[in-house]
Each structure stands twice: as structure tokens, then as C-alpha cells.
Amino acid sequence: MIQTVDDVLEALGPIDTRLVREPVRDYAAVPIGNGAGDGDRRRVIDLLGPTPVTADELVRQSGQATATVQLVLLELELVGRIERHAGAKISLV
Image: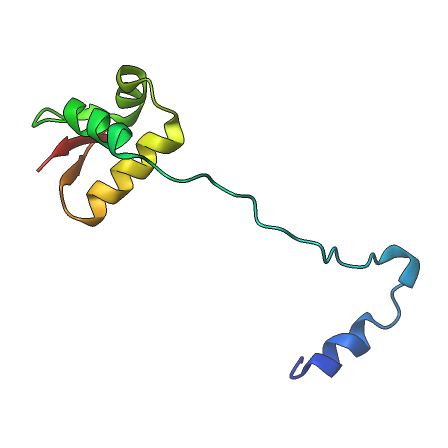
């Protein structure tokens, strides 16, 4: 039974140290951009209505990147302006 970190280290002790790499310590977050601008947001909202559509259709019709459309949809969902339907469709509330 393992109860402490020392128990884990004791169990791992027999492992050949040549098989263990040092962890990479120079991690840097990848910038994801500035988000959706007002024009991008407006294009996606204008395509939404009471009739459910898929996110793929919104991407195709808006000409925006998939990430931008998904970001706008997430923002709209967080403020309660869209409704999710069966078949991964979305409509305005």
C-alpha cells in the first residue's frame, strides 16, 4: 500500500536511471490569439436565428475560422443567448 511519496520513490528505486529523462522545464504557453472581434461576432450572430443550424454550417457561411465560431458560440452560450438541439445544432433563444 502506498501512503507517502517516499513509498513511491522506494518502489521506483530499482528502475534503471538511464531510462528516465529529465522533465522539460522550458514550457511556454502557446498564444491563442486575441479572440473574436466585434465584426466576427456580428457575422456569426447574424447567421443564427430560430431555426437550428450546425456549427459547421456557421463556419461555412461566415467564412470565419472554426476556432472563432466556436469561441463566439461559447460566449453566446455563457450569456444564455443560444440553445443547443439534437444533432449538434444551435439556435438563438
